[in-house]
Image 1: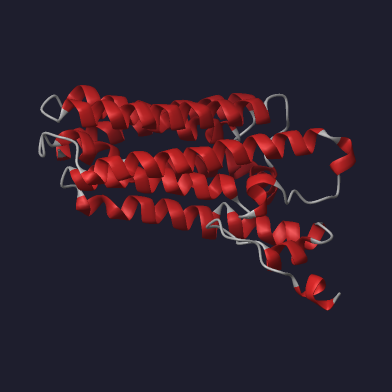
Image 2 (image 1 turned 90 degrees about the vertical axis):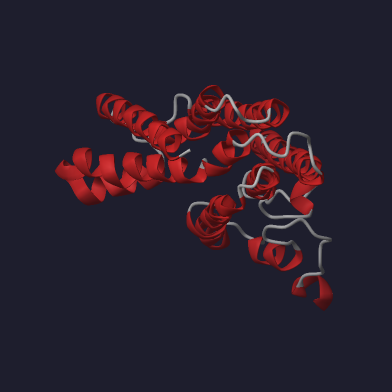
Length: 265
């Protein structure tokens, strides 16, 4: 297993190096975001072909679900970013570091994301490496259910947000209908739920040790690049977002509460 894991790491870092060179040519580090989901697709298929002794049905199940998740995310980000300038996060770093950004971006963006991708992919390996148990278990079925829930929230959340933003009349307003009525970040919740589902497949195959993967992914979505980053910006720029925060769960879907503004009426 260690050899296979190291092989996957070498492939991921090699691809990240190529992607970094492309980013220098395009002068756009945002392309790393497009590769995030696709990198996991490559990893899971690598694990699939290089672990022939694993239980085939579980392998097909997780490689199929991981591929659907990764390709959808890749296509979503590609369409969203197509023809647009570099993401503001990378623009800020580019301005801060000036002439040394070209080499700094290799480590701060591409190597870092490659490392995270490599580490987080461990449930995809653990679920496919072992041939025991040689039948689907309760954990496998629970994983399928959780994945479907997560996929629904992520895809529905992204689609509803896309439709909302496409209407000029909604400019300056807050999306608080559909799945956005139950969580302020349905797409991030759905993403995390799918990774906990992948962990359940790994757990069914004895890969309990890979629990750090969904924990890292969840913390990353909540504390680093997802919820925390967006909440700060939206709370400062969107009128009424404070009331939305008071009435709607931040992450896990829940029944809406009454905001202080509503209660005061």
